[in-house]
Amino acid sequence: MSKFILLVEDNPDDVVLALRALKRNHIANEVVVVRDGAEALDFLFAQGSHAGRNPEHLPEVVLLDLKLPKLHGLEVLQRIRAHESTCLMPVVVLTTSSEEQDIIESYRLGANSYIRKPVDFDQFTEAVRQLGMYWLVLNQSVKQAGEL
Image (cartoon, rainbow, N blue to C red):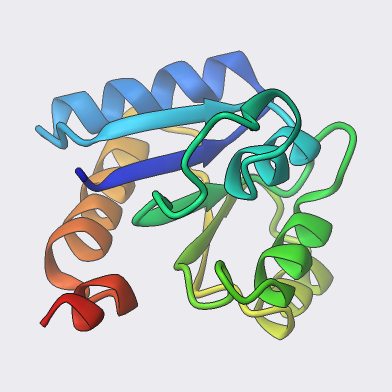
């Protein structure tokens, strides 16, 4: 199964920017986009509208916005970390929030990284390039370790 990215983002403009930045950086991995926190959990745990999905096929990395409808990103992160099948999955908070409390709480709940979205497209593209290079190429995941 191929490595894929789960992008949890409710802003359509930010989705387009992220997909464009990934494409511009030749990151050809599939990107699954979900638009709110509840759908993110449904996808990850293969329930609700994603009940037919193989729950063992998990993303290589989750790019998680915080300010989401239905379920805040911090609650999504907390539930990801509480479940045995997803507790070690890399989660990168990718948000416009620079509030100190959001940063502290994200790390307290187990975020692997916290990145503030640059407003400039070129800076955003570079941030996405670095994210893709690190999480999809350089990082040794738990899944890969189990395959050795």
